[in-house]
Structure formats: structure tokens, C-alpha cells
Length: 386
Image (cartoon, rainbow, N blue to C red; front, side, top):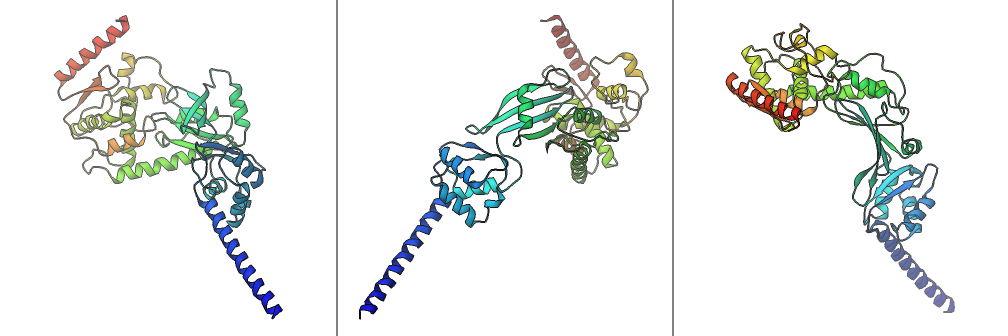
């Protein structure tokens, strides 16, 4: 009887222990999966060579987890401890331990911290060093400079050497292929050479993530692949009655639209002018094509066109030649490609600057001459300082 009583008590204790363990596991899982205590977003730095113990301690210090032990146990149970990735990661308010583990083990680019942006613009290459403010989720500029004209700031040198700094190449709409290649040469985080100049118009304006040591030719290839897809899509969705016969001609037209206006809302109108002119057998008579004939895309003209240049017979002078020039004159963006493929339906055949950054459009020469006279008055007033 005594042994039976002892055995019965032992079974009871085992049941109680199992029940308590089950409850403890459920509680721990609730802690791991439930909302965390973080009230404001933080940028978590995960240095190269660190481990989950140090990461969990840092998270506890910043008030992001209630228990570093549960954090590590959960990561172990999910078999993610060995997948820890170095970088800088944005941890949102209320993020659960499970969500944080996923963020620091998923891989890929950092989601906060320092970013160096190389901006390839029409006039120059600019470099910006900026950091993400986790509270506002907006980047704050720390430094900016033009490599060809200014000394390199110390913060750029410091941040470039950090392993969690991200690098990005931002290619503006309307730059030429020569400008892109020359700008890539000026980026000291890249390596390799570009054997030959990419065809004009073949590079997609966009923002490209790069890493120190990336090959310049491979970045060019990425830009070309992206542009091929964009041109193919625009061509596929084009209006059936366009006066262009090939995707290359569509690209040429888009590049002219790109250089004629920086106002997104009027690209369709500008496109309609050129389409109407082509349909009527009128010369395009657009200054950007003449400028390209002078510079061949190698830099900015930096002055007004001379009368002799407007009369000069170059393959790109649309005051002289009929139809489209033989090549694009810049690398157009998606909006200009779409405008070329599906222009607005208008009767406009003229346009001139209106003094606001946009253009005044006209259906007749008389109306256009009045718009030109108004623009000349604005130019004169600006020149006199009034």
C-alpha cells in the first residue's frame, strides 16, 4: 500500500510538472510572438562577427525585448541563430522578438543607418552622406559634396569604411551615356573599366544598390537590362497609329521629350507636338537635338546656341533634317517613354517656354509668335534684373 501511495504521488507530481512546463512554454511563446515593449523605432547595429547573445543584450539595453534569454531560445528553436547577418536594421515600435529575429537573419541590404548616394545629374556627379532617423523614418543629410570640385569630407571617408554603410547610384533622367560612364569612373568604391561607351538611351534612369568593389561594367549591364524591359513594355503598349516604326525610334522620340521638359504633367503634350509634326511632315525643330549635335553628349554646352549651329548640317540638327535624328540624345525615364508611346491627342504643333518652368503650347503660328514674344519680354526683364 505504501509503495502504491508513493507511486500515485509521483505520478501526480509528474503531471503537475508537465502542466507547469507546458504553461511555461506557452507563456514563453507568447512573450516571443507577442508585441514587444519598444515605444520608439531604433536602428539596431549588428557588427560583423557578433553573436545572438550580444545582439539580445543590446536589444535589452535599448528596451526592445523583455527577456534576452527568451529571445535567444526562440532564435535557437527557429534554427536561426547561425543565420545572423551583420548590418543596420530598423526595429519598429512594438516589434515582437520573432519579428526582430527575422529582421536580423533575413539578409539583404541594411534597412537603416548610413547611406552614401552617388547622384549622376545632368550637370555633375554629387555625393550625399545621409542617415536614417528611426523616429521619423526619414533620411537626414550629414554631408554632400561634388568630388570634382570640393575636398572629400572626413565623414565620407569614415562612413565608407564602415561595414554596414549602404551605397546607391541614383541616375537622373536625361543624362547621357558619356556622363554616366564618366561619373562611374569618379566613384572610388567601384572597380573595373567600361570598355566601350553604351549606346545613347540604353541606360535606365533609376536608383541602383551597389557594394564596394562592384564592377563598373556590371552596373552598366544592369542599367541596360532595365532599359530594355522598359522600352519593350512601352512599345508593347503603344498607340497603333504612331509615326514611329521601331522600338529604337520610340526611344529616340522619348529622349527628345525628356530633354524638352522637366515637368511631368506636360510630357504628354510635348509628345503630341512632335507626333503631330511627324504626321504632318514638319521638321521637329527642337534645340536639344542641335545641342547634342554640338556636344555629342559629352558634357553640357553651357551657353545658348549660335545661329551658325542652328543652321549647321549635323545628323541631329532637326532644324535641317527631316524626321527623327539617327540616335537618342539622352537616356529617357519611364514617363517620357510612356508619353512617346501614348501621347495626348491635341492639335498643338508649337511650344515655347512660359517663364514658370513649363511651356506655352499653340496650334497656329500666329498664336505661337505671341507666346514667343511674351517669353522674350520675360527674358529681357530677367536680364535687366526687374
